[in-house]
Structure formats: C-alpha cells, structure tokens
Length: 398
Image (cartoon, rainbow, N blue to C red; front, side, top):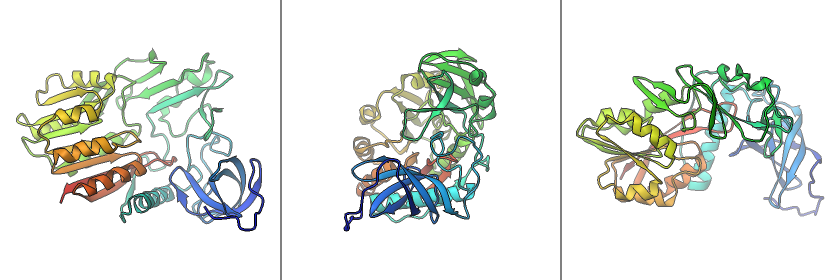
C-alpha cells in the first residue's frame, strides 16, 4: 500500500471520493487509490472516473461502491438485473460489464495471479460458453431467507438479505418456482436444483420438500442418478464442456490406472472407465458421503471402478499404481499434502480443474518444483456475471 506522506485524513465509512479506477483484482472488484489509501471498488470498470462511497475500512484497505460514473468505460452496459446495484444483491459482480469484456477481465486476473503468486508468466484464452448472454445458466441455487420470510441473496460481504422475485442467472425453471410467492419461517436456506432432464427439486435443511429425491443428469451418452444435495456443476453446459476437454487432455490408454480426486458422483469417472477398459482401473476419491453413496449406485456394475469414501490425503497413499490423475478440488485447492502425495505417485499426466486461480497457482508452483511442467491451460467462463472462472490445466513430467 502506498504511504500517506502528507498525513492527509484517512477514509471513513460513508465518505464519498472521486477516484480513477485501476486494474481488476481477484475477488470481483477494481483497485483505486485516494491519498495513498487503497480502495477495492465494486460496480466500476478499469479506466473509469467514479464517485465511490466507502462501505468498510480495515487496517490495510478500504472498500467502496461506485455510485456515480463520471467517465464511463466503453465496456459499460446497463445491468440487466434490477438487484445488481450498490447495496443490492451480492451474487453477481459484473452485470454492468459487457459480456465480451468479462472474459478479458477474468483472463487478466488469471495471468496476474500466476505472475504475482507463482512468478509464472502464462498466456491463455478464456472462452464464453452458451448461453452467450450470460443469463439463465445456473441450475443450482441456494436462497437465503430475509427477516420478512422472503427468499433472497446476501448483499456483498454482508449478512443482510436482498429480497428478490427472480434471479436472472438462474435457469427459467428456478424462476418459475412457487418459492418467491411464499413466506418462509426460520433461517434455513432454500435449495433449488434443476436437472438436465427437466426435473426440479426443492430442499431445505437437508430435507426434500418438493420434486423427485433423485435427479437424472445426462452428459453425452452417460446418465447419472444423483441426490439433489450432491455436488454437480452449476452451469448447465459445464459438464459437457469440461468432460470433453478433460478426456482429450488425459489421453487415457487401455489398461491405465487413473485417480479421479474430489470425484463427486463420478462425472469424469464414467468416461474414464470406458477409456481404460476392463483391464484398467479408476479410483474415485470423494469425502462427501452423500456423493459416494450416489457413485456406488452409479458404478455398481462397472468392475474397473473403485469408489473410496474419505479425504483425498487419507485415501490416495494406499493406491499403489497410478498412471494418470484428474483432480477437481473445491475453491481451496488441493493443498500441500495432496500435491505431495500426487508427486509420490509419479503419474505421467495430471489434469487439474480449478474454480479458483489463486489456489491453482499455489498448487502449480509445488507441482513445477516436483518436476512437472504446465503445458496446457485454458479458461471457461462457467460463472458469467460473477468474478468466478474455471481453469483446466495439464501438467506433464519433465
């Protein structure tokens, strides 16, 4: 952070200041400075001049919302959602940014994270995925309940619930739900899931309230029968997009022994099992008991698949032969213990699917130090209108 050599007054919550908006940062905000003090600004775009209202202060930086744009960016659009305003819903970060520019913002964030955190200079493309307008893609939604008993989403960095009557990034079947017309008691979230075959489930507090208790997800030639609470990619086109690329990068051979780490219900396990054939082996490791129960049913008759229920760092050491690894960890990444275990297995190829560039960089540094080379990386905008982005990276030995 820059110094304040003239001892100018420090910012306080509620202050309004005029600033030039700088680079996008990891987290869905843009960096600005006022009297040497760093401000993380939402609802702005690089290159704009804006009036920013300070919303919070910490020892290191301030946060604020752009409440008036004095010089707009060419990439600024009118947010399609009426709730995507300062003080409104915090579910989206980039509704005010043209969809084509959002992919460029995410590309620059990924490159900056690799450069700053990993001292690795990379180039990559970030591809948009249908629907290209960035709306009506999300098939899984958790709604909070307001003090008035109405469904909504949290405001940015807040426990305050913004009541809504629809969410524009949710698939239409979610917005057509009856939940918005009802009053709800208690503070358990409402969980709505819509499958690729058109089924819709409403659950709350782990209990199904409406719809089938098993959803059927179809991805290419494979059908997965899963519990609504089991993890499934939220973007309606994510499963096909990720499976197609991952299988190409893995380049499996008949007889290979493969590990599918953080494998969920087995989205990638099914095509892997076909590629390695009867003489191969696929080890699916997943810590969610609900997901592994689903996986055990899905692969009950597939003898080359073994489902391991437990934490990856506990289960991976016991697997003796590993030719190839695929991992799709949560936002926190794999971490030092798991990467160390992967290195010990010395697979010829590691394909890493990541929903957080910072944790991907941390794990990539350890893989590179362990003798692996990042030879392919691409991004997919599987979370349009939000700061999040999916990366697929391949590491090979030597």
